[in-house]
Length: 248
Image (tube, rainbow, N blue to C red; front, top):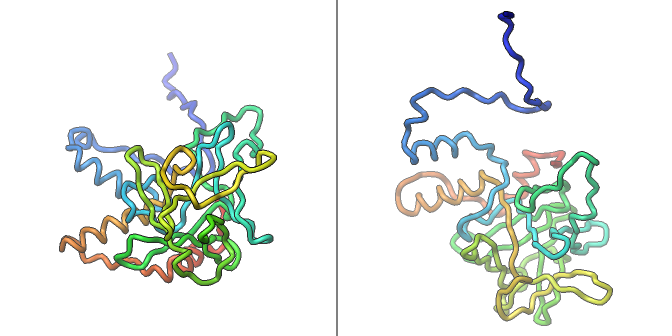
C-alpha cells in the first residue's frame, strides 16, 4: 500500500489566502469570542449589509430586486446621468452560475456611491464614486438627478433600515426614493412616493471597515472607546488614495 499522501482536489485561485488552522480550543470558545475573532479576521473591504442607519457610510453599493431583472444604481460620468443597470446584461461564462442577488458586489466604479454625513446628523449625502463627485438630489417634483457640485437640502437623504434588512431613503420633502417604470419599459429613479412598498426598498451593501467604524463611534459615545470619529469631508479622498486604481 502506497504511503504517499492523498492530494487535495480543492481548486485554488491566484490571490487566495491560505486558511489558517485553528487550535482545538477555538471550537470550545463561547459565541462572543468566536464573533470577535471573525470580526478581527474579516477583510476590511468585504461588502456587508448594515444593521443600523448610522452604519451606512463610505463606498456603497445599492441594489433593487426588480422583477424580472434585479438592478443596481449606476452613474454615467460621461452624460452625468443616473443609470439603472440590469444584472441580466452581464454576460456569464457557459459554466458559470448566476450569482445570488445578495452575493453580488460592485464590478465597476460606476456602481459605487460614496455616502457621507455630518457627525450627529441622521441625514446622508450620496456622492458619485466616479467623475468629479456629483451629489444625488431630488427636487420638489420628485425628479432625481446627480449633477450638483455642492450639497444643500435637496441633496439630503434619511436612510431607514427596515425590519428585513432592506433600506428606504427619504428626502427633504418626506418622500421616498423609488424605482419607476416609464414608457417603453425603461426604469428610472423617482423621489415622490408617500409610503414604502416594493419599489421603495433597496439592498444596500457597505464595506466592513466602515461598519466597524460606526460601531466604534457608538462605543465612544458611551465612553467605551477612544476611536476618533469619521472625517466625513475626507471619506472619498481617503478611499481613492488607498485605491488609486479603483476596480473590483
